[in-house]
Structures are given as C-alpha cells and as structure tokens.
Image 1 (cartoon, rainbow, N blue to C red):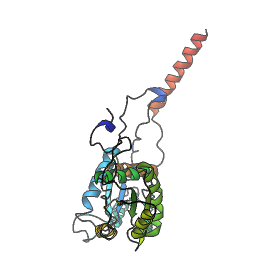
Image 2 (cartoon, helix red, strand yellow):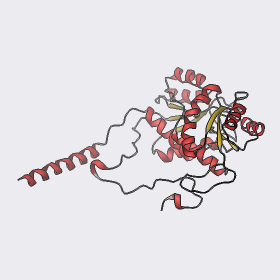
Image 3 (cartoon, rainbow, N blue to C red):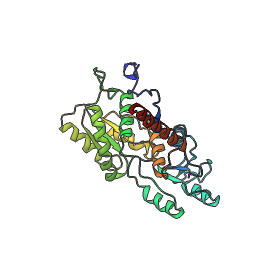
Image 4 (tube, one colour):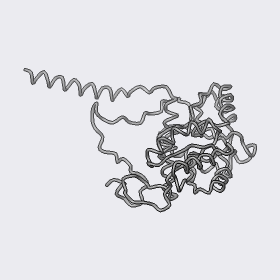
Length: 305
C-alpha cells in the first residue's frame, strides 16, 4: 500500500522493491574508504539548548544514512567558551591536524548564502580543509518546506488528495536569512515549492528590512487572499525572534523551520559523499557482472551452433 492511501501520511514515499541481479541491480550506497576524512558540520550558531538537539539529530540521520562515516559538529562561534563541552570549528580542525588525521570535510549547516560563510572559508583554508557548498537550492529542501506547511495546516500534504483545507495558503513567502543573496538563491527552491503546491511562491530575507512585507504585498497584488510564511531555515542559522517578528508584522501564519527533517540529514550525507574522491566499484561486483556477461555470450554461441 502506498502512503498516499494512508490517512495522515505527509507525502508519498517510494517503497523499495526487490533487488535486481547482475548488471541491472540498483546501485548500493558507496562504502566509506578507510582513512577517509570525517564530516565536520559547521553550525552558524552558539552551542545551546535551541541548536544542540537539531544538530545532534541531523548527525544521527547522517550516520544512519551512511555507515562508517565519522561525524562531529563545530559551532561558530562558541557561546560559552566551551563550558558546555561543545567545540568550535577551529578547535576540531586543530585536533585533527595535531592527531595527524586528514582534514575533515566541512559542511556548512545553511540552505544558502549566509554571513558566516566567508569566515568559515578563511578558517578552513588555514588547515587545508575543503568546504562544501551550502545545502541549497535543492528539491529535498522544497520537500521539507512542503511537509512543514502541511503540518501547520497551511497546505495539502500532496496533490493526489483532492480535498481542500480551509486554512490552506493561496500564496507562500519563502523566508530565509542571509540578505538579498540568500533570497535570490531561495528563489530556485521557491520555484520547486510552487510546482508542488500549485500556488505562487515569493522568496524574502528575514534579516533584510521590508523584504517580507514587500513579498506579502506582491502576493496580494497577484490575488492571494491567504498568504503564509514558510521558513527555508534549518534553525540554528536564524534568530527565532526574526521568525516570530515576521509572522507578527505581516499578519501571516507561519510554518515551522525545517529543523531535523529526515531529508536534510540525507542531503548532508550526500553533500559529504560528493566531496570525497570517487569510490571504485567493488571487485566482486565487477567479477559478477563479467561472469554474467561471459555466460550470456557462451549461451549465444551454443544457440548459434
């Protein structure tokens, strides 16, 4: 049974089928080569009760998605000088260098451009550590925002169910942080979200005065009667007061931030893997495919005879 037929299921989920054999089998998750660098999640916030649960849950998802990966979270900056036991990005990079370990792959926990990225790149360059791109734009982020809207009763869970929600938004302001550059980048995820919701979506920056108000006004000019706010925010990178103020001043309901949504963890894992050297196919798999091919050719020769 597909989840589209299950009441309360947020989105359809593809059910894995039986594994095909030989050359037509589905690709498996690549193994992490021995000696590979760790994944260092760079958190643009101080360690605290708001940020720590989200970060820990996301790293747990990463480890469940990719066995064998070593993970750590570095806060930039540290809000308590390390008193909480949490370490900064600089401390973790230093520890790796002093231990003679490969420089970790630094993955910034942001969906797009952010003010902390220049400092992060400068710091990582001192240790020769690679820094991946931000997580977005990406379809998985659009999926996550859609789910958060549906949880808030502001959107249908999926377009397959032909029923209406009285509080459903007929226009969405996709809010993010990082100024105009972040809003511009969020526009691409906004297009993906608009395709899912079949309503207009306009991106705006929470930390840019007047940006959210202008976006709401634009939607109303387009005919939207019930616009809503949808944070393209994971959580730690944005001040919670910005989100609350935007909802209050605009008079629009708002969904929750993405938080430790499963797809965000998956995106972190895939971003890390993409930064690693290519993993060669397993020798056993090659031999299996070669044996299958030889058998096929032999069978063809016998048939011809």
